[in-house]
Amino acid sequence: MDTRPIGVFDSGLGGLTAVQALRRILPEENLIYFGDTARVPYGGRSRETLLKYARQDLRFLRSFDLKAVVIACGTVSTTSLDTLQKENDLPLVGVVEPTCRRALAMTKNRRVGLIATLASVRSGAYEALLRTLDPAVEAFAQPCPLFVPLVENGRFRPGDIVIETVAREYLAPLLRKDVDTLILGCTHYPLLEEVLSAICGPGVTLVSAGEESAFELKRLLTAQGLRTPPDRQGSAEFYVSDRAEDFEGVASLFLGEDIHHMARRVDIDQY
Ligand code: DGL
Image (cartoon, rainbow, N blue to C red):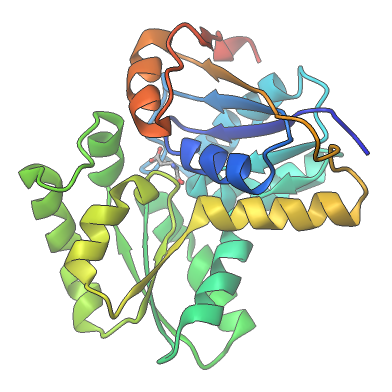
């Protein structure tokens, strides 16, 4: 039994999709979220810059006494997870492996599509792992650089002509490849689930990165005897590197609860 909190971080709002999943799957756990809103988006940046940012994000989170961290950012998971795991002596859960396992469990025709940031697609991490786990699988990747800025600006709802036009253009090449499973390889993308599933149609199963990492964390905490007793309601704290008010507005909409005055700003350059 261990009641210490779990750290969760992302470049911005996207990791809140993992927070939602964690609250559903591990409701008794305390969460500390950091969104690097001053430096979002991460998706077009170099490996060196991403590692530098991820180290700072983690150093900030580790100023709390944590029992584990979820790297709720596909871009950091695809480019920096191994290094961060070597440098840190606490369990770090990324999104790539759990998501690939779920996609392989869902696909019937073994044609899997991946949408992710430019840095994640460039890393080849999702495709490499899919092929290691199942050499017969064919993976098709599409970078979607406009998705994160649109989501961060609240443009993720069905009926929004901008996001729908962009999404149709990004998905068309994957749909032509006849994929039956689509990995949402960036934690911002579950916010687009309604838009994406309307374009893909019922023949394509969407697999979301944040949710699978929450299941993975549950397995890990259980195996290591680190779960909090289930008879309590976990808390959540939110930290960001830019204006808290901006984050609170969109985050409240998305989480479906009022988190105004709950986020605090952190000077991430100090870490
Ligand atoms: N949500 C992150 C990811 O999963 C980062 C996106 C970005 O900042 O570009 O990749």
